[in-house]
Amino acid sequence: MSGSVVIAGLGPGADAMVTPEVSAALAQATDVVGYIPYVRRIPPRDGLTLHESDNRVELDRACHALEMAKAGKRVVVVSSGDPGVFAMASAVFEAVESGPDTWRNLNIQVLPGITAMLAAAAAAGAPLGHDFCAINLSDNLKPWPLIEKRLRLAAEGDFAMGFYNPRSKSRPEGFARVLDVLRAVCEPGRLMIFARAVSTPDEVVRVETLAGATPEMADMRTVVLVGSSRTRMIRRDGAPFVYTPRSVPA
Amino acid sequence: MSGSVVIAGLGPGADAMVTPEVSAALAQATDVVGYIPYVRRIPPRDGLTLHESDNRVELDRACHALEMAKAGKRVVVVSSGDPGVFAMASAVFEAVESGPDTWRNLNIQVLPGITAMLAAAAAAGAPLGHDFCAINLSDNLKPWPLIEKRLRLAAEGDFAMGFYNPRSKSRPEGFARVLDVLRAVCEPGRLMIFARAVSTPDEVVRVETLAGATPEMADMRTVVLVGSSRTRMIRRDGAPFVYTPRSVPA
Image (tube, rainbow over all chains, first blue to last red; front, side, top):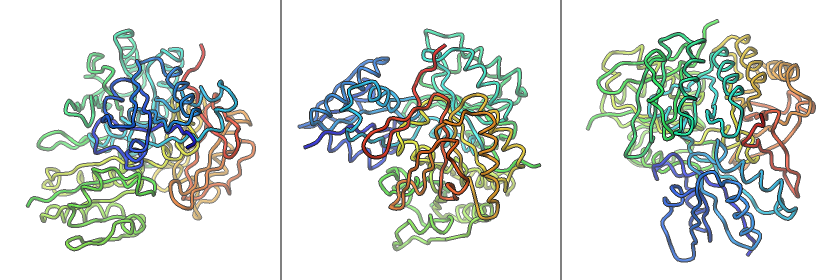
């Protein structure tokens, strides 16, 4: 049996958002590798070895997966959300490119998943219903000035935005600076959504204005959405709907 | 039984990419409404009425869904891809906001799906593995200068990009202008992906450079991806992998 690596998106948390093709890949796997909380979502069974690894060892994990595939295993690398959005797919291809030549002809496949930004948008209504950007706010892997530049350009272009990794304990000040950049370009009433632990029992979706937003509203389990200047709120009994209209008048 | 409207994403085409929560909503629906090719993906059954409608009547379709829900039906509005990404969710909320007050307290839910851009990225590797933008290139609902402005800002910010509705028979010249805008900012070797009918039997994924791209490579079934300046190609037997590394050096 020849080996393979499938990089599979588990979606934001709910099993009801895992696609059938991802479930099928997991059912056929001999080995599952991934960050601890994602691997713990996979039920153990005979013939399946679960390999949990810590955060920030993505390249080691990718190399491990590729080595096992080379040895004939059917490996699934599990990612939260979509593996191609700030997740494991790029790490695997980085490992392929810098690894032995034999790795690049392995059977490697990416299976998309529901990314957190789109699950958060669905939970709030349709705030990303027009042109939008996705920005990773972590400066672990890129310089902070590039983050500020992209924020400014996205705001000038009146894109809606989705932010991943908005705030961590190691850089609590970053998200405050993000709010400052947005406030320099956008009006105070600009709608924002703080969506924490979307599709899990801990889900909290909070609608705010840019003026009312504070850094503490975000943590590493939160996806933050920012509307465009045309994003609107529909008040109703219970949580409001937030949506961006499809059209922009001339 | 009180009525409801579920706006559900069917993903880009393959049934294996339809989430279980969307399948469950369809199994409980009394009425399904949507654009003809999407409704035709739903198998008929007793107790289910299928309502096909043409393209460009999104608001009428939304009002019809809301009226039926008000009358007690369990309505599913089907969208291709993700309903919140250039699809039916915003149209339904536009109808809710401008409709009778009773509509806004209806049970309305959006169920996310695999959007074409992310399915295309997965088919090619991980070209959207870093910050990216999604832009609808149709100028049916927004002025062309805004499209050009957003393209230019996204290119200046070195975002990867995903383009929806790149080219239609009614505006064949638009995508040529998009290529001109990109060429004014990006280097000729910038990687692009033309992904047609992703996840269907007709799928074709073509990797090009900006210099080699021509307007004819896109049509309305094509999603076009543009890498950032850091996006790389891994040559191998068969189709190459295209990916954007996770890091940007200082």
